[in-house]
Amino acid sequence: MKFVLPALLYDFGALEPYIDAQTMEIHHDKHHQAYINNLIAALEKCPEFQPTSTESLLIDLEDVPEDIRTEVRNNAGGHFNHSLFWKIMKKNGGGEPNGLVADAIKKSFGTFAAFQDIFNTRAKKVFGSGWAWLSVDKDGKLTVTGLPNQDSPLSYDETPIMGLDVWEHAYYLKYQNKRPDYISAWWHVINWDQIEENYRAIIK
Image 1 (cartoon, helix red, strand yellow):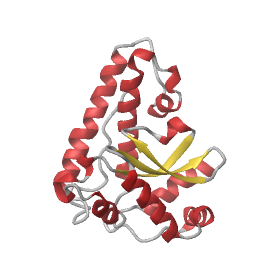
Image 2 (image 1 turned 30 degrees about the vertical axis):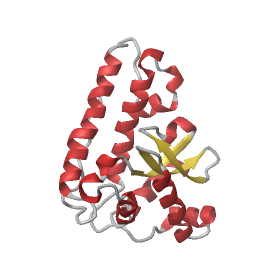
Image 3 (image 1 turned 90 degrees about the vertical axis):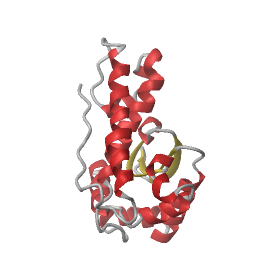
């Protein structure tokens, strides 16, 4: 199968002042493309192995040939994670969710503020590089997790609907070592409509 860099649905500067244009351009055009290139190169080493999708690679990592499994885990994860990340942000985003995902957040965490505090804490505590995730587990419940590197919740029997990239390349040009400032700013660009769509696709 072919792996292609998805086009952004907004220009590089659309998320200013919260995420700067230069970071968005480098992050999308360089970092994400590198994950795709590395994934293609890894799979070329085992041409007999033909995955059906990026998701299948991450869900069934044990089926991936052992000699390329780590490369696939890192780079299929990078491709999948970033493809979701770009879509859950938008110009003039932020605020609080409505609809089914809002109801699920309230049911799982009590209030939106409580959820936001839990999510922020997870994002801050990711050691080194990684992501904070809001996912749906196999029982249909919402969970908040922090995972290292480009690990995906898909590899842990959960389906992500929202994720925050806390690798330094996602924020260092503007925020330097101030990850908490980046996390706080990111809530202003969240695309809750897309997250609602992601949630509905899982529970329907």
